[in-house]
Length: 188
Image 1 (cartoon, one colour):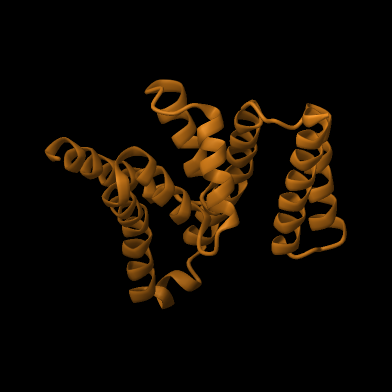
Image 2: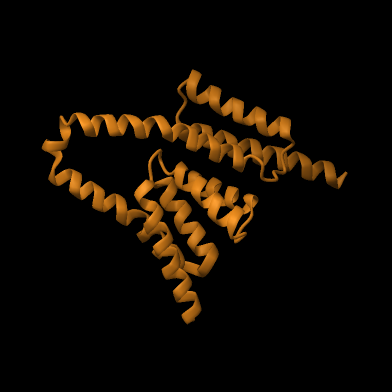
């Protein structure tokens, strides 16, 4: 019990440390988790992280909060999930509190505007890097179907401006249909 509690506290500390860098909707955190837990610690593999991210992205709420909770639960139960979420939300809460207090000073500050421009410029490559690493995970879909589904999602989002909810639901339906077809094929 004590070991599990200490592990949960270490998850709080980890997510608190990386929570200061939650730019880009949390994808930069997923990239960091992939480096730390998949490549370095071998705590989980790419497939497990991909599953956690897929479920976390599909649930209501913030993606990175959901991912932190699911990962924490995966590592050491509900306490790990709760402490992981608290760790990931504490830094942004502190930053937002400071920005709110000094909003009028920050609003027209040239240096703040330039800093945010720099952050926006480097977030895209971090997100792209995370996507490339996660796509290497084993998937039951053949590669052509995986890439086709990704392309269809991009087209729905960027060309037709479809709702993210619609895109996720369409992806779920495609996965269910594909696996249903495979199950029928395997029974024959």
